[in-house]
Image (tube, helix red, strand yellow):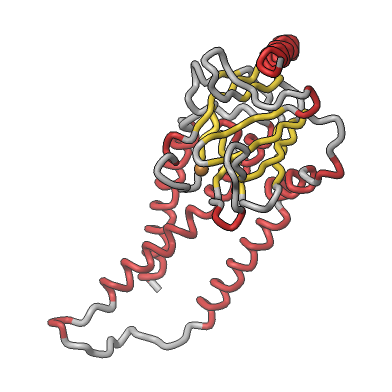
Length: 271
Ligand SMILES: [Cu+2]
């Protein structure tokens, strides 16, 4: 009995220490989230990490305890007097606790947030969003704004650029495709559309159209925050590490000026 009490005391102390370390990590996140979906994902992550820390510590402490407590002296296997085959109380606790944790994760509002996020992602529920067609090719991200008849948005250097107005929901329509070369869908590769500061990412798969919905909530620019960029997050060939594009979250009035500028650029290129 004394051993069990000692084990529980060590488990509680180490769990508290681990929770303290976790809170220090949470207080210094690596980047600032700038989209409502990112806040939900961050909240869900923090909730899960907080609850799973004692479980993780339990497994590690138990493993170390068993290694020391039941080691064979002098390398000779020998049945310990304190060894037992079954402990009904322990099994009941373990099954009951696991069940409780699983039910909690299902029912807790933070997990339900994620459910809402997935539900709001249904294309039928999104009218009036800003639509951005995202084309991933080896090795480039191309952004089109079909509602504004802009086929490839670029910055003053002629490089692909993604610009979004703050506060408006965006529907990204994502395809892995190469508009500049003859393209064989069976030879195509998977890319992954990832803007770290949005807190979400999604594979872009040849032959499949996928959707991602984001509402940027904070003005931001890749110029001051490198996490505000599109980065391919699926190894897709030698150009993969450099398959990135700058992102800016701007005011609605700045955005309409920018769109007009893009339309003028394309009119000149076309004419
Ligand atoms: Cu890629």
